[in-house]
Image (cartoon, rainbow, N blue to C red; front, side, top):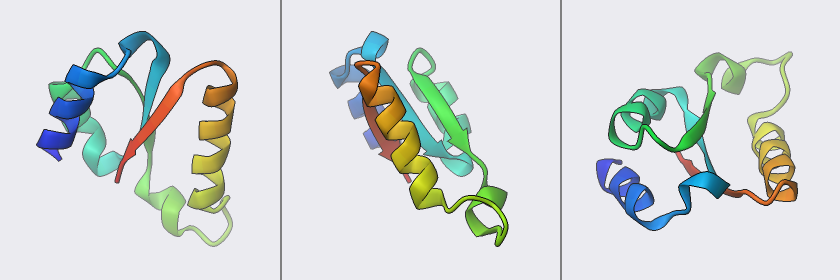
Length: 76
């Protein structure tokens, strides 16, 4: 995970990239790659029977950000 965050930190356009992260990865990303925009997905949203499916959330977030010219990465 740290290697992935280091790679992202060194190889992406920070202005035009967003990370979509599981909450377990989010704090690590805030330490290692703090200058990169990120969205945290909470665990409770993953397993809830009444909330939107996580696959749909990730696809929606990715599509919204890509339409705005952003590249989307996820570390799960």
